[in-house]
Each structure stands twice: as structure tokens, then as C-alpha cells.
Image (tube, rainbow, N blue to C red; front, side):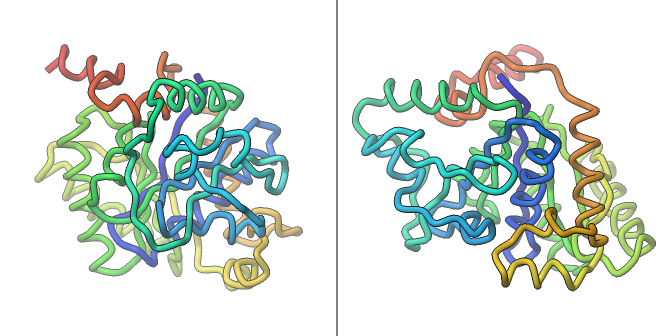
Length: 274
């Protein structure tokens, strides 16, 4: 299976979906077959940010009403999106009739891609935790606000309870300067070491950039802005780092792990080593 990565946050409004979408676009621009999974059930907005029209959603696939390839839409740069519904109905990862067929369909669909990027919901609800710990890496997005940092710490604490070996990468979004981002990253790293006994990888920051808002209004990913804006340059740098620092592939991909919660290969390994 390919590389799997989730983008999550402790609270809404920090630009989590915007980063997930543009990171996926940046990967696709590099020629890497990339699948973006919108896992914010009922509140999906990845399709909107990409300017893609959709009819069905990943919730339809989970209910067994259609196949993944029937829901998938092609976005910019050849990116493929499995969109979530924006109906406001908060579903989870429960499957409809034909559980084995649904899992097999999603697993085989995922196998086509080198990268699977999951845009989770925000906060500590079960569907978010289940998605976030079913990948190899987690990008934790925070902004330079006390509430965002506090919520991010709570999120990391909850996720590490479920998965102590998780590779967590902190990204500060909408930072006014490098010094502001570094100060927050240092404080967060100190908190995680002192109170959680865990390490977090400070993976840089996305600068405050007026072009990001303009791109969102036009439903165009800011990663496509030419010439690149400061935020576009930062997201490209982030994509390059992940591409140059791949983790060892797992036998189970994202869908195998999140839909087979109790028998996911990583969970077995954690139980054996603990």
C-alpha cells in the first residue's frame, strides 16, 4: 500500500481542510498518484475547495449503495477525491449490508495510489480519532491562538492513548512570521515531552497569505497559484519533505485499518510491543 497521512485539528476554523486539499494538490503536481479522502462526514467541504461538482459521497459507499469508483471525482492536477456529504448528518465508519464487499472495494480502490491523504473532522469525536490513528502519519494543524494550541494538545493526548507509535507532525497555519511559528512550536514540543512523554515533529508553518482567501473564494487551490504565493511555496515544501521521507509501507492501507479497527496490523503490533 501507498503512504497514508491524515490532516486533523483540535478545533474547527484553523484551515485544516484547506491544508489537506492543497497538500494533496501539491503531491499530485509532483506526479504522484494521490487520493484525497474527505472524512468529515456531513460537513465535507473538500469538493467545494477544489471546485468539483459531486453527486454522491463516501457515505453512500460505506452504506453499500454504490462503489468507490462511482463516487470518486477527478480534481486539479489529476488528484482524485472521495468527497464527503455536506448534508449536516454526522455519520461514522459503520458499514451497511455486505461488509466484506464494501471493505474490499475501498481497499482495492485505494491500492491505485501512491499517497492517500485523509481530511478528518475536527475535535475528539470517535470518527475523527478512528481516521487519524488509521494512517502512518498525522499532521496536526494549529493556529497562533491559545484555544487552538490547547485543543491541539488535547487532541494529541487522546490520539496517543489509542496509538502510542503514531508519527505526529505539527504545522502552524496562518502564522504572521517564522519567529511566531517557532515560538509556538517550541512551547508545544515542551508540553508534549513534559506531560505526555512524547515527541512531536515540528514541520514548519504556513504563513498568513491573502491569496489563500482569494483562492478559496474562487474555489481554486492556492497550491496552483502561479507565480507561487508564500503559502503555496510552504505547502510545496511540506509535500516535498513527505515525499523525500517516506515511511515503510504497511500491508494494510487506510481503509483496511479504519474499517477493520480491531484487527488492523498496526494495532496488533502495538499490542505485541507493549
